[in-house]
Image (cartoon, rainbow, N blue to C red; front, side, top):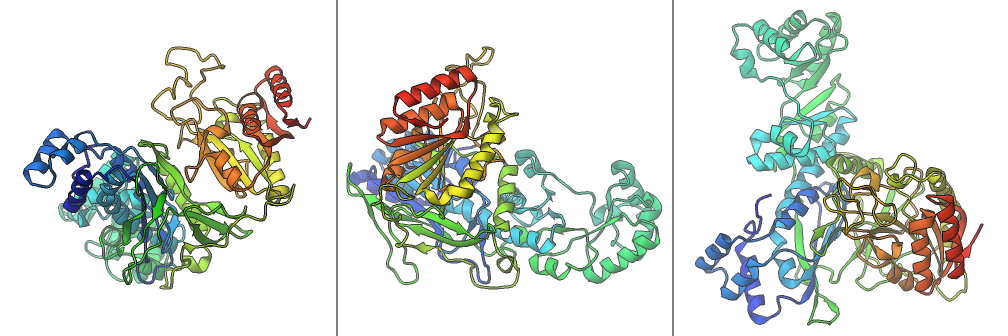
Length: 635
């Protein structure tokens, strides 16, 4: 990716220049991105562009020519020029996953680091998130209106050429089936679609000649545009040329509901009962919804998804919320108080709660130093960047699948295209402290740790353990019966880099792993092997822990939570004194987690039947070692 440092506003660098001059540029700070409101009538928004943004943050640097030009223009002085020459972002970023829902007040992105490095990202954050989120939020409504019928994104000719590629990507995240944009297909692997325009028909002597040429090139499964001259005659000619196996006809004009009914009757009369009908022409969610009962099999959407007329701005803002007064000083919350633009200071930790059907019922955030809420609350943010390194890289298809699942968590009334107020508003909740921790036993003092129940560690994975899937199911059953017994339920995952050895943890190409200190490639972040095994139900998990980002890691205590916290700090803040440990593998990561827990001073139980090992001999040795360290090993 080309350098992105100059994709910013001048005042970002003039502010930076002042901070460099007065010595405050390295003060610790936190910025957050959020929307104060949704577009009028919208009930939810869908976050998009995160994958593009993380790439842009990695590329946010300045060449020598860039710096020289900034000096010549009087934007920065010599001291700031030197700062920019060596700049790359080295902070942390947490945020909502791409494809997730957001509401007014949702802290969708938190950027932590020095004042200077967080400040200069403002424009690139907002330009990407505002554009892509606006597209995805409109596209998601169109997908709902289409009721499972496929939609082609075809708005490239209505916007800037690079915006067209981003539009196709965001629409695909939201559920569009294909795009007409070949650059988007090449760059992101999005399926492409398209056949012919009216010019193709007009360029031939007759409509039949045009259809014959297209069928010879693309086969009878193609889609023929039948409304260049006369729709009924166009349909007859299409079936005459292609036969009753014709794939589809496209209508691009007239009263689409009426014309589609006529087209269906005529196609059936001609014996082309399997030929589908696709419609285009200034469609949006309202038009698609109005066409829902018509015999239409697919839609093509262009202008209304690619331009502002179809997607009002997302109105994301990026604000300083906390800053330290000096090195070693605590972060101090800061907030705007101006009318209509007031904000809440301090680093926020967002959570959601769901009903027993999986329907989202609440979203709120706790304050910067507040304890975590109870076990019903699920953290929303995940780690995206750690010390300048991207640690979250799901595939686009994984993002798309996640986006579809988030929509399913909304009640039907929130998914209606009819105008309404936001389904939720995300605000500070100050009454979410844990239950009292004064009792010797019970939910407030006990936690459950589920270690590495991932696809690569169960049968069929690159390091699959016999009995892994069965153990995953047993852990799920235990959670179903006992989730309320725990103040914290933490699930860990290996989350290794894809493009390096992770500090020698992966074996070198051409060499065999020794299965002691070097291992086959496994649990690469964002790839299917790193996902939780499907037999593990994670709905009750309160904290998701990732570990091994570029380094060997076995114990869950070596990882960080979605909010960037160490597991030991989460447990102590919650008043936990006793841990139940489960997971895979008994003789490696479960062992390491239990021993670290004892080292940290917790009472530890290894629950019988809820762990699986690589080999009987090493598992037996691990059980003896844990027992010797004071772990209660249930057998």
